[in-house]
Image (cartoon, rainbow, N blue to C red; front, side):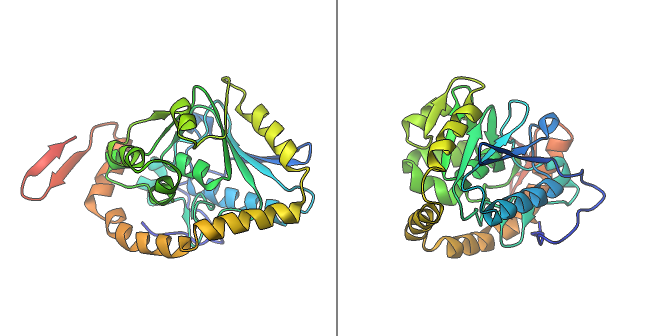
Length: 275
């Protein structure tokens, strides 16, 4: 799978971008609006998110943003139907959905309801704070489709939670509750169902009272001191992931998803094996 340059247009195989941008009390709210797809990200939506966050960074009238999803979902990750058609929502130099490899300069809060799976989880991890409903769940299920979480999930999780929990998420691909992640310190605020955005707005309202330049500087210091080698790690990861992305296992995983069946993995010397 090749990465897409931000200026590239989408093919006819993908839908129009579905991202709604609004302001609420001086806070920029960026909403993924594909609830019929559980807010899965296709290429036009990735391009739209990149534009929305670039405009947020360039707008001096707002100092904090919230990323959320419509219809009771945060995001189920990449739209595998589009991926199977060859349209991958990974932008060159920016990563999945246009922000996971190069997050915005200003603070961003993820407001999570429902599913934050695969790339959706990685989107939340690319944000600076996470507010989640008590009924939300998180997962990195890529291994079930012959893929890995290459949008920063495998790079960021070991820095933010115990090693063995990060490995559980990466190797089992099973969901973990927002309540459990709050216990582990990954979630800043746990809310009642349906209240993630309201709570994120309250948090953003307090954040925006602070000096905008000071906040950007604080974020830069924390990010660069903790992830000084982040770009090198993404580059090294890409060398490892590239053969997997273009290999038969990834193609079979995406095809099985589209055909609504279990993947038939091919294990060297053992023939076909279903998971």
